[in-house]
Image 1 (cartoon, chains in turn red, green):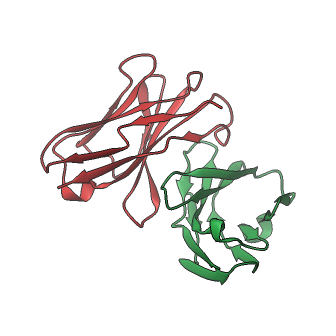
Image 2 (cartoon, rainbow over the protein chains, first blue to last red; image 1 turned 135 degrees about the horizontal axis):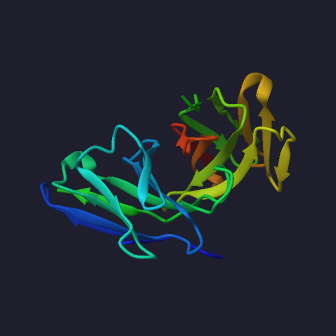
Image 3 (cartoon, rainbow over the protein chains, first blue to last red; image 1 turned 180 degrees about the vertical axis):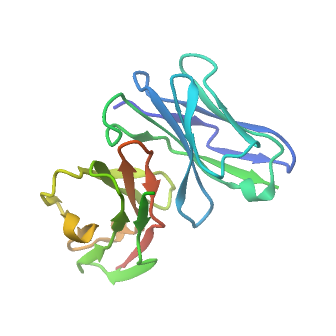
Length: 115
Length: 113
């Protein structure tokens, strides 16, 4: 069964550094997402991406964050100047064309630890 | 704006008991989708079920069943004869027609042997 692949599974970075979280969505999917889950808390929507641009973003997704689809397969989340409170699990998801409720597939997540 | 409420923060049961996880949602759309995900201790999100707003038929899958009631804006999840392996955090989520998926706060289920 097709999977969404996220790398790395765990990343440790120093406060103030930039990190790039990588995702390879399912190949025929057209909509891409990033979600964040601070330890023990809910899964929060960050951003959605379609047709090479951001289609929606939450209030969490400020200027510190950016997303990119640099080639036909990768979808990245960049966090500039990381803060301690950026420590969380970051999930990538993708879905196929069609009704919004269909075809969401989540990756297994990247656990980011900012020290 | 869409909103999902899971009022039960934590539930603890003994193996073989039945347990129901509550989910109440708010939306102004007539077309929307509801989901349940399981998050085991390993951390990944495991898809359990999707329901669209036009299909109120209840669903049963093995020991799992879901009760969708538009009249009360609820989409409750019942595990029958619970097992230790059911221990996880369970999230209810909602997608409106033009918005992306939003999750409830989750319910941590602990099944004791």
